[in-house]
Image (cartoon, rainbow, N blue to C red; front, side, top):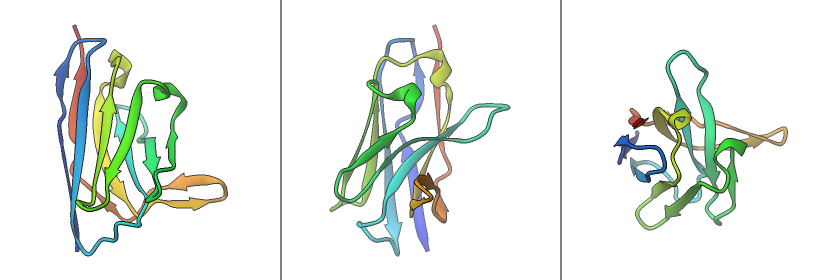
Length: 122
C-alpha cells in the first residue's frame, strides 16, 4: 500500500556530489520517520541517516559532515545530499519509511524502495 521510488544515483569522481531523492505515495503519513540505508556487494546493509518529521537527524559516523538528510513533508519526499564522496561510499542506496527508535537505536520500518546505485570512482 506504500510505494517508495529512489532516484539521483549515478557515477561520480571522488570529491564529487550527488543528491538522492525518495518519493513516497500510498497510505503513508508525513509524521513517519524516514531514512536512507546503503549496501555494498558482500557487505551488510547499514543505516546512513534518519530524519524525523520535526527535522531531527541521525547519521552514521562515516558520513557526518559530508551528507545531509532533509525532507519535504508536503510531498512526503526525503532527500540525501552527498558531498565529498569517497570510493567507500559506493553502494546501492535504499529509502525506508516507518523507522522505529527501540532500545536507543533506530530500526527499519516495513517499506523499502528498489534502490539507486551510487558509484564513486576515478
